Structures are given as structure tokens and as C-alpha cells.
Length: 213
View 1 (spheres, rainbow, N blue to C red):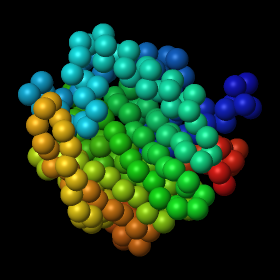
View 2: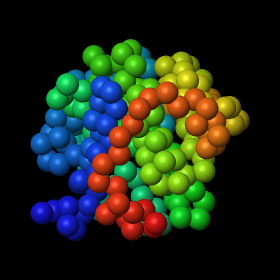
View 3: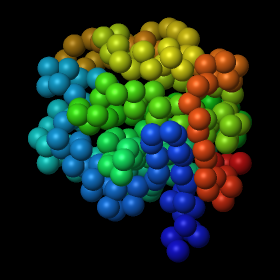
View 4: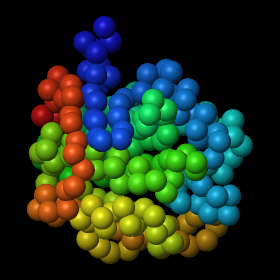
């Protein structure tokens, strides 16, 4: 089985409503279709890299290439773990957890998106809570970071509900204009105090060397 060589394919995170897993070809096809259908309103751009400012077909291909690229570039020193988020058997979006020199720094970052029809249902909070549990409980992280544009109230709200605190600002060039990003940080104590989502982690032990642990 492929998990003998790439054990991440056996990793599962389960919450009351969701399953997060590393996608195989069928899951990637479904995720690409979700991206093609739309991730945000056309008059907004919530990403620093405007990968969605293209045709639906190109959005689907960008999604596939991103996942393939993260697999190809994976190393214990620098990794990006990208899950598909599944609700009621349907792929609805993706949640990422990434780090550099994690074995020493013990810090992770997160990123995510949901198809437009699945937004506003609390899934964003639940799926980020899942990867935070993986980071803090499963991998022994000390800190997690996030960032959202100043006008992205939904993403900022998820961070605040999960215990993040403000950690300064950053400036980005998006669609030819300067945009302010709000940085946030979560430590182990803040995560433990705000933790409300039950998460079950399956298949982690064989993966630990891939994280440098």
C-alpha cells in the first residue's frame, strides 16, 4: 500500500461534523471542482497570491498543481500539509498546516478555503480547530500563527474564537493596491483555554519522522 512509503495518506482528523484527510486523486478532482465553482465574491481577493483571479478551469488546475507541488517539495525541515475537508461525504474545501524547522522552532502556520456554498456554517472554525489539535496535541507545537486581510472579518473571527491574539500588521500588494494584513498568534496556553471542538487524530505515529520528530 502507498501508505508504507507515504504514511500521510493514512492520517485522519475527525471532528463532530468533519473529516480531514490527505487527498488522493479522487479527492483532488472533487476539490478542484469546488475551486472551479468559486471560493469568494469576484469583487474581493482574500489571498496574497491571487490564484483565484483566473478562469474556473485555471482555478481547478491551480488547485491540483498546488497539492502536487507540496508533495514534491516535502521535507522534514520544511513541509506543508494540505487536507481536504469532508462534510457528509462531500469535499467542501481545504485546510493546511505548514512549518519550517518545526523540530526546533515548534511553530506552525495555517491556511484554508471553503467553496462559497459551504461558507457561513461554522466549518472554518471546526477545520482549523482540527489542525490546531494536530499541531499542539499530536506534534507538540508551542505556537501557531495566522493572518487575514483587515476586511476579512470571517477569517479574523475564526482566529479570535480559537484563542489567537493580535500580533501586528503587514502590508501586501493585491490587485495593484496596498492591503493591510492583521497577523495573529496563538500559544499553547491560549489554545488550551479556548479549545471547544473534540478532535480525534488517527494514523499519526508512522508520520512523525516526516515532520522531523
